[in-house]
Length: 102
Image: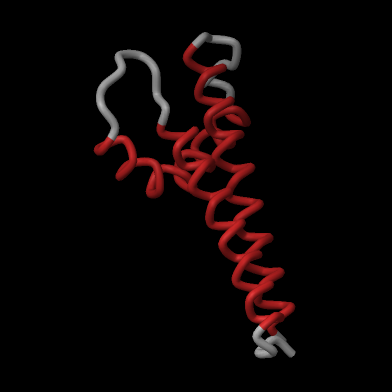
């Protein structure tokens, strides 16, 4: 049972990591006019990625200093997601060592 829980948590973290990365790439390409925001498919993808990632990025943006046109909040969030993944794997290992993992 715990295998399924740890797998789902790790899969959710991995999917969110990719969503943050894709959102940063799409936003950058749209700001340089490589992708046309008026295209319905591009707009739908960008809007979906924005809605998925913005609740996690907004508090980070509030705490980071203003660096002009450079937005480092996706990088900070990717590092936090990676740290959470490492913590989940460490918790799984400790549960195995303590004999609490079935």
